[in-house]
Length: 511
Image 1: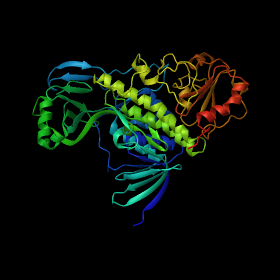
Image 2: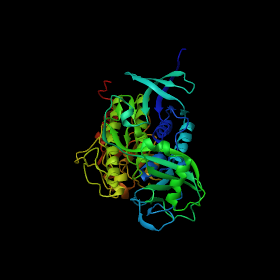
Image 3: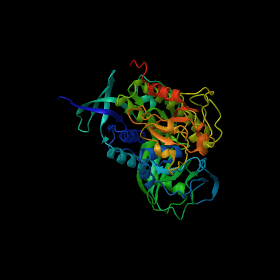
């Protein structure tokens, strides 16, 4: 039987938070993606994502923060983790999450909590509306790379094989050690095996109010799930013991955790999972790109995985779009690895330190002074940033932004009442001091195949970008400072075409 053939700009494997985010961000940049997943439906996870301010800024710039906020959990819901012997017993201790308070002066976007499944549903809907096609029960059989693209063979639900030709292949599911055979992995590896038992029970009159419970009687956790009276009991469990856990045995474990056997319990389902820490040695190999769990798997504490995955998709999408428009060289993809792999390594190290677990994936380059700096102050170093001679710091304090290339472009309230953040998302933006605006050329060179938008910074906020009234700051579509001229002159404008060429890897791209 002759195979059918399809051509798509981008093939994404994995209808995960990472894969669906990539499809949504690509769609926002005008690039339709085909997303395939071998499962008929992704398993529901009890975990909640605390979407940081930086993640919400990315979603806001792309235009789909509101649908995410619509399914976000009540901000007033308790977030502390209570340690108890059983749920009916007294609270032995309370652990508050280490989340920072984000001042309005730093960002108008607030963090929010979303359940993994509900977040995936929103991203799937957004991606579909922006041109993505989602095919479940469709698996990647094999693929091959060449200079012009990727040829992949997919297996459809009925068993028929289908050949897809794409410009790029994004692997967004699995784990780093099982995605690309020619890309190595490193890290501590598997830290433990766990089972999540989803159940329904009215615990309102039984348990104290908390965001979750560490239950000593069973050596596990009881966590709330979306929906009234829905919970999950999460336990360490060796894979060989899974067959022993019948519904009856699961109810016994839940009764033990509650501390009573007279509560009506209904088992909804079970999911086994590993807590793992490992990372790929490279996040891309030419047109093959790893993101999400395919690139890096970190322990679920402190809930940063969803942020890492969304921000990886945010980083790679505008670069792929620029290459497909013919406005950037393929070498631009290498900046994805240079920018996101160090960030993923920092995330693993952060999770391991909070778990008090031995082992890291890379030596810490600098001390992280606080959580706010960790979430908003990370700095990129790559060819997609024209760095200055400043020592190459890894972090900067978002309360005292510098505007240095590689940093997050700071929130500034413009004279129009908008935030600078409202301008980031689609294309490059030139932020200009008030004295620089009159000297702007009539026509700016295009960046990434799109027109550069110009925004005037008010005089009182120039310090946030480290420029004078004559200064210029070029911001990438993902809200990262790419280049700046602290005191711009005619030569600065003359250099801009070369600056854009360097940022888009249009020089010496031999691949």
